[in-house]
Image: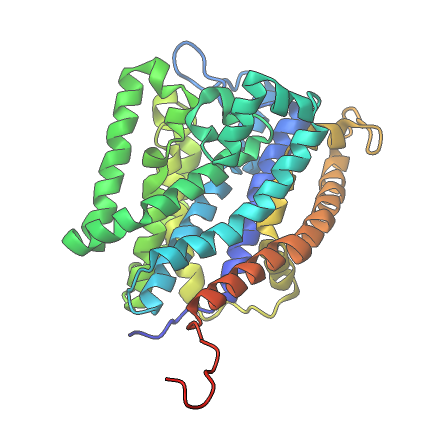
Length: 386
């Protein structure tokens, strides 16, 4: 079995980058009430006004790609763990780890948000629509219906997607066993492009939230992370030369592809493989020091990234524009300070959630698994009794 050449502290840094991207993207929407999907009848992105042009091409406008980075990290870590354990998949252990890692913190935040929602908890318990919404979220199926896709918490859709990717992991392992990891990745990319094509040909289907963000459309992102894990585990370097140029080219393609509606369909692919190249370069670059202060700070943010993701979005609009922080009208130079202040508040809450819910849930899962592994012992029988 190959030794891991990766300093996994770098993974927390990548998680920190991912959550900062997502936070900034959602903050842009909250502050300017503007999302990057404004195309005219010719399929050209609306950049006629100065505001539109700026907001469409600010770095924060591409912060949605933080979700793709999270999916890459997830696929990488889970598959690397599988390889490190001798390529033995134990379903009970795997799903127990995944459950205790993500579900209890998610459930707590879900129930709190349902209680403080404007509709009140009675809506989710006493009304037919509310009860259906609650059950869809409890079973992490809310992302397969447009009606429940963005309810309770807009960010929750990707957690349902993540859970579904876990369920599909044994399928990936089976296909990988038959045709290898290279062809497996190619197969899921083809599947994604095929579904994209169907969505383009049937606009009503392609524009639906559940279809555009379905597990089979985005499966390739997670599998790309698993593919990279296998290559690094086997000490196979994918990009030896020209890595920076490749990354820069993919960044430019990501930005340029947004200009046309037809090009925007491929933006997620360019962004994903841009992060894919960066992922390998960053993990295997021995010149990158993990002792720098900024590295430690972003890594700490990454350590709490799941808790930040759970709580950051629902009340961003009220927090940015509410009484406590004020509107500031057109004093946009103050926005960076406002962003930092708001993120500080969210981080403080998330850190408490990380310490007292996330970590405790993981520990509880470990205790339960350890108890199941212990052999059952029988009470000693008195002498002379066989």
